[in-house]
Length: 115
Image (cartoon, rainbow, N blue to C red):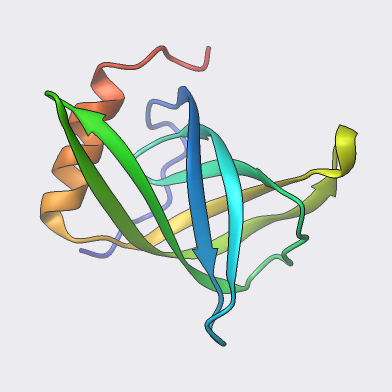
């Protein structure tokens, strides 16, 4: 399912391990800090530039089960250096399957809002 950019979607606070896979197959680990059905903000030791297309993978726990979410994505916010050598990176989900999107929406509805 193709996703449009709507920043008005509910964003929630998370602390989830994630992996970002580049087009050349290199996997970059990170920690997601906030999440919506349209994208996420994560921290990583590796800088990524705006416009780069990636595949994002992360797991969510819902109803006692663990689900893997995979979304084709694009870096929306260039990496900015944060404390402890981490970079803050914003991604926009550009394509995610319908089942994963439903699981993600259910997970988000049970989390603490960002604001």
